[in-house]
Image (cartoon, rainbow, N blue to C red; front, side, top):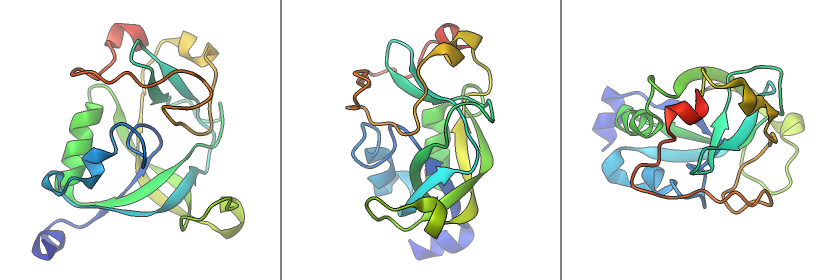
Length: 169
């Protein structure tokens, strides 16, 4: 396994939705058959973005609209190229989501931690929805996502977990 890490340098990824620990798609990150992934801490976007829940599947979408919404709380992972390919496949990068490197404030995983006071800014790959219908900006915006959240919009698991592009774009 370590030989493959030397051939494939690790990349840092920021996840904010169904890939987080305890969320419906987290098993993708924990399955070694998908490649290597290691949790390295919690993080928050340095800049504000709109995080909305939309489509008939109640999917969390991070919209590429800087300065609108909230700083987004999520998790940071080191992943190898094989895992990055699996994440790209899930997120349908680059045809649906687009992965870009963003500034993330990172801290080690602790409860009730003030990330801004103890964290450091790092770069991490983050999946955004770059093209979307403007009415998505009228939806409630969140700073953190959980499928079982008080919003009452539980993620709807299905064989085809992708939103219909006509609903979103």
